[in-house]
Image 1 (cartoon, rainbow, N blue to C red):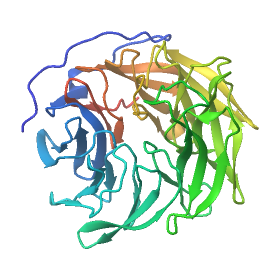
Image 2 (image 1 turned 120 degrees about the vertical axis):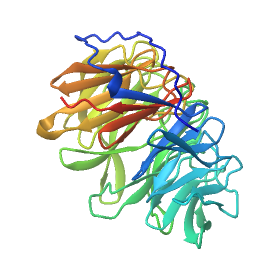
Image 3 (image 1 turned 45 degrees about the vertical axis):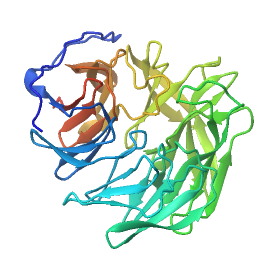
Image 4 (image 1 turned 30 degrees about the vertical axis):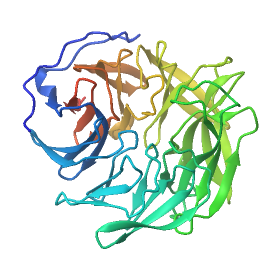
Length: 398
């Protein structure tokens, strides 16, 4: 299937509260018609692959769209694992697609069709529909579940592999122990919110540490986000309560104990949420992304996270969506930071140079509202839209 000749519809719906300029030319963005709405993107050495809303997987090779597989759940992320694509079938099997387009399925269909995966070396990890954690290993061309353990993980949570202790031993982190009664906001697709974060040994699947929030607090989140603040590894998460709404928190580890090492202010009222953005060593969030989204930078000061406003009229989330990765922070030489995120209407992608204050470098029109995670690979950003395009955007060099 060749790239579409349709030209993107021009929609101008940007309202940044800083000086703006377009800065984009036709050469900066190309839109590739993939025939269905892209939900998840994954990159490898040969290009970018997309999991579509109809369950197909395609890869973009130059201007060509190559069919790779079908029958995957569009609600579970697509992962690149050393050049091999991993996803979850609609029936819960682990699906792999190798570089020769050979598709294999795990013998047992155990996985939640909404849960994330993690992979490293010759192992992969996933979440069962009943909250168990599963470890898969290669047996020939097939992935086989070799271990499972009770974890009460949320069936739509993302698994993260991170060296939070900084000792070279990466652990699995997953949100668990859901409650449907503590905080009834439902901004992430259902009323069940996790109340605990687990640290799990990737080999034995033993729970090594557990951070449980006191009632009525929850983690209004699906994804622990690794970063390093002041040379200390941490995980960024959203904590929320009925009285205060959401707040940004950093999770750290001392010896074997997980704890909140720094927290930002909450909203002081219920039903207000924020979506974090992290770089390797910088922390941002879009506050109220559904009602006039505001971009803030957070600086750690002891056990506090101090927010500083940067821009308004942006958004990184749609109410009810489990897609939390529609923006990116790119840390460049000299301390400069490039932030890519959608406009409030999500019909444009905005490039901000945030060196102190933020300056708009470019504004890229899309054919429809953003529909996928934002993937940065080499000098390009990739994002899907609801019109059925994968958009390839050349990163500004400023």
